[in-house]
Image (cartoon, rainbow, N blue to C red; front, side, top):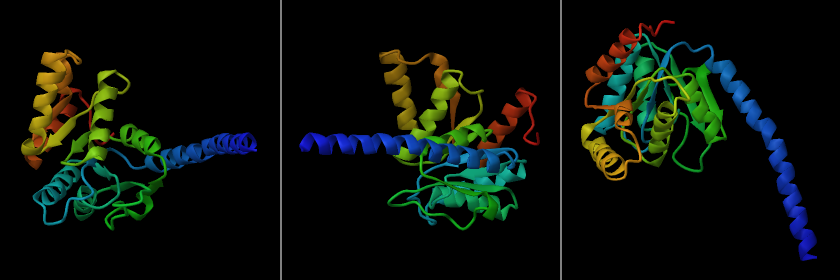
Length: 229
């Protein structure tokens, strides 16, 4: 009897997995259709727990405004905290404001600054991350937690392995990021040689909105690219 019950449960799991393929496919199709129309954008990552009175919330808003003024839209994870600040800055500057939201049991909810036709919800993290990478022309990474680190290292790995073209990855907040960068340099590179020396150059660390814009503009001038195409 136990064997029959176990087998039935396993068969149900396999059936559910098969049907999940269609839901995953639907998320990809919906994301591709909507995001292919948004134009050039820069993604902003960071903690959902950052409060409006936090200096990094205000800095994120400033960064987003300046990015919009230089010809880009803004993509965020669509939730509160840093994501809200990024969408708010884009909204106030009159630019494209995209939210790629994820269904979570806590923290995550839509913020009110996303363009009504550019708010997309996902059940699968991996589908959502594909959308970030495919439709972003740069990453600006504010202080955050595990989710932010996951998105950061995903982007670094894809560039390191030449799976996607190189684009700017900008870490904002030297006080926050310097310890991580020191560990990467001294432990991953110097002590264990688990990365190459050039891999560190994939990311740049700054403190101000002006430095973010300078890096974006320099990158697109160097490669003769334009955010308007």
